[in-house]
Image 1 (cartoon, rainbow, N blue to C red):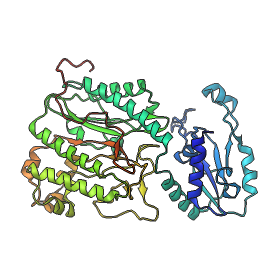
Image 2: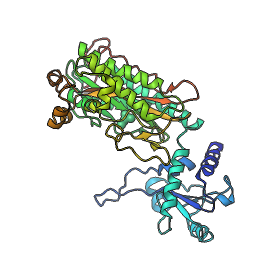
Image 3: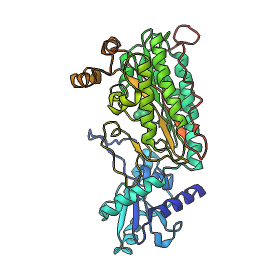
Image 4: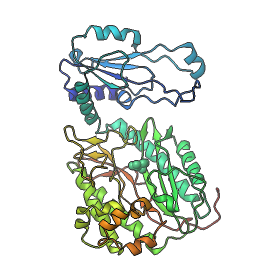
Length: 438
Ligand code: GLY
Ligand code: MN
Ligand code: MN
């Protein structure tokens, strides 16, 4: 086993405070497709299992008994590979103790409370309150990335950057969302990606305002926004980047909107320092975005009072970001013991805690013209004084702008892992010529 994994297990074990409790962490099993075929969704071990093993081993269980030592107390139990698995998947026997020996390990400890993380082991009792407490502590312990994780994320960031180079080389009026997706993802794979980190988002024109849009055969017209939110995954570690471009030449308004988001994003990145409360970083960005809308004549009032009234939610309806790494949402959530806020401007935050060295957060402000929000009569009435509705209505269908980077919090200045991907809005194509992919 890697030294890194042994250190990781020891650090997590110390953070769990199990005392006489014991712990099982299950990898999980492949999930069959619903059509009653013999196929399954592609298998991914539960992140809690993967974090302490680095293995994609269906059916495996890691067991931990703190009384056997913070390092020596970890045991890996693996199922025996069947002939069918060897024939159909070339699955190889993983190193570890036979899964059949796990019930005896549990029986020896039957009077002790047990927590279960990952995918629960069928038939084994788990103390629910202990499990909830241990999950919270485990999640918190894995928030700071270790050197191996950061190195893997740098590889994913390099593959992602290569994809964006290709996407921007072909971006021009006349290209479809699908063509951009194909070129972007192919380049991720050519540069070492094992998967995409999540379903790539490519939205042209009005589709750029759909937060989780799936690319279609729609063609980007001259002067339309093209929003790309995509990232490569390498060895289970994910990068999550957004850039917004214009097919053809940007209009002055598009430049202003893009600049307002970019200015807010760069300020927010600068605030990603150890000890900063993420909710404060988010709220300050909301005010920065409102300041941009005020300077464009789309909102009226002081940015702080607009945020106080929650008027920013009309144009910036999501949180500023989340942790990213082992999965696109990684170990996001709240600080142990902190309940989720119910305030409208905070309840969509996927993260509510003070930042610490080693955390990798996405910083992804956006400004969008979303019909479902802007055409709502209740909101129009509530915010009739502070929004220049005639100007906003004239922008219907323009879409939106989001800019997203992945930021490593350190004990000093934040480091942008995705800084190789340019953010400036420029004419697309940069050297006008016919698009090479349709
Ligand atoms: N990539 C999806 C998101 O940032 O939420
Ligand atoms: Mn994203
Ligand atoms: Mn994101």
